[in-house]
Amino acid sequence: MPAYSASAPGKVILFGEHAVVYGHPAIAVPITQVRAKAIVIAEPRSPRGLVRIIAPDIGLETSLASLPANHPLAVLLSKAVSTLQVSHIPACSISITSTIPIAGGMGSGAAVSVAVLRALSAFLGRPLKDEQVSNLVFEVEQVYHGTPSGIDNTVITYARPVYFVKGKLIEILSVKKPFPLVVADTGIKSPTAVAVGEVRQAWENQHEAYEQLFEAAGSIAAAGRKAIQAGKVEALGPLMDENHTLLQKLGVSSPELDALVEAARSAGALGAKLSGAGKGGSMIALVTAETSNAVTTALLKSGAVGTIVTEIGKT
Image (cartoon, rainbow, N blue to C red; front, side, top):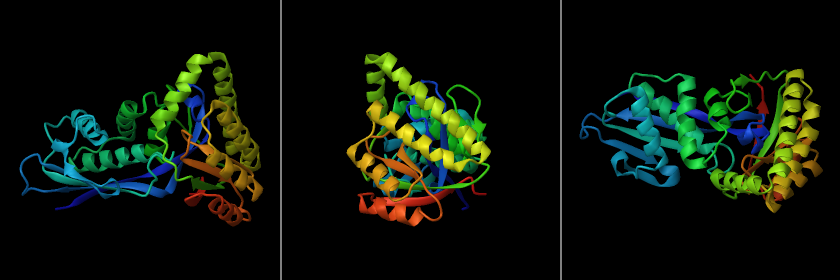
């Protein structure tokens, strides 16, 4: 039997996390060094409709029928069946692996969903278009993240840098001059829904103050877009530093994130900030070819459990 496989990258948010939920712009970029992968294989000798799910990274090996109805994979597959207009999924196995840190701010859940949808729709002979994939993954994200912006499913589906404003057309961002980033994982799991929920509560309690912070973050993202399109990489560093200060004021940083940001800057990074929901997860540092190794070493010495060096915009 042929195997139908698909993969999807991780991501980081360059500018505008949290503010993007409230309609302000943000920039996200794919991180292709880490990926989620799904493989679907027909099992015609199995009982009709038996769908086995094997996800060793999270210790899961079960049947779809045995999953709780509100499990992310159950929700995803239910939506897929409805969208693809099939009565049921033929007997098969769905194997899922991922090198993206879970609850690390790099879009692990969205990447798994994108990979599974693409592999499954190909297996069923009804490949989904990118827009359909992104929309379905967003629906699943809504179930588990409360009020997501839609930026994760967008950047991961299209695997291109995006300038994103909630409710508006997707803008694939043209990168005039590629630039290197170091991504560092604190090792502290930080579920997106928790941080997003805390920010929403604070926004409701201190509406005017938080609106000002969101607007400032959106302005930084707009400035970052111009710098990226003009190839002015050096301008991104100060913008990242400004964005991190705003995220501290939003209350989503942590001592561990702040320590890594400071370590990166001290080692020669042009700028650094937390990336994603915060409260743990990952941070990013803008580096040069000359400073990349020093920054990576400094981050590991300062408590990062892992680092990735990537180049944004490289074709």
